[in-house]
Length: 73
Image (cartoon, rainbow, N blue to C red; front, side, top):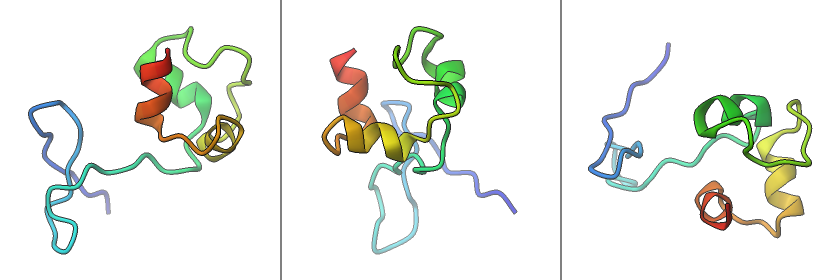
């Protein structure tokens, strides 16, 4: 069963259940770069293969969040 979370004013998903009410949900670490390119454009994360996991990218980028990686872009 897939959960659907309402989007906040900034377009990001927010958790509705306490104790994390209002927190921005993090992308799962097993999300593939190819999937992220579908959302953020084909030029997202050049130098990484499309089958690389987000957790690997975050580790190589200094444990930055996806939001921080996007800001660097």
